[in-house]
Image (cartoon, rainbow, N blue to C red; front, side, top):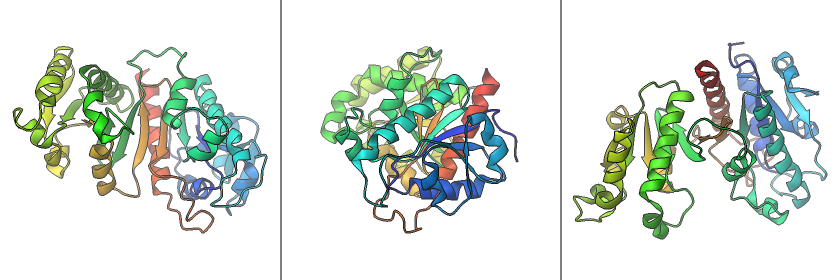
Length: 336
């Protein structure tokens, strides 16, 4: 098995009625020889139903010795039975507990990072879950933990050689101009800059900044946000020593030659990042949270209720998420 971080990754099972258990089993099958090693935080019985060998473990430290022959699972059984495609509100508490357990293992050093399988928000909300999603929940779980860098969370989507980082996330398009402030852009840039160094081993990261308006505002003739907000923010960041471009037209920012000019790009709204990511690699994109005391990645897809239990789900994205988490954890160890 290839060398990797000393500690295994903690992989929370996610919504049990979705495709999570199936893609976890497929990911283990693809990674069992080369790693990175992970242990599932979830229901061992449900994992056994996926047709791969499973061993319940008592400690994450046991995962490395099991991983080559079976999926290691820290077993926390579900309170209710699972029907693929039909989420059960009674299981929502366990889903949240799995995430919290995985984060706790990473904070204690027993896990080198966290990988999260997709969750369904509706049953979680019905059970009292008060966070928009994984990103905000994990940020809350780690809020009191000391962190040397600029604290996120910042969402980054990756596909092939593209790292697209979001200044705003799930905001209505009409609200984006007001949300794209100099403070928000600057904080995002600092988080990304520090993550490129600590989590990706890039000593002198090059950041690109996307414009908000067509043609990056065309000197103010198609909007003033570039002149009033983005250009001053970029100049101030460069004065801090961060290599970031002035706002660049988004329609020329993602082709092969353009991507070679930067290590990460700051995108100002959801689709500005997600469209190029999904165009480059629809099946293998990864969602990563930057600026936290723990490494966290996730597949860039949802629960797939429409295909759950039918053997159709592809594990490309989860495999990529596990590999990226292992690489990031290794860089954090190497950088001290």
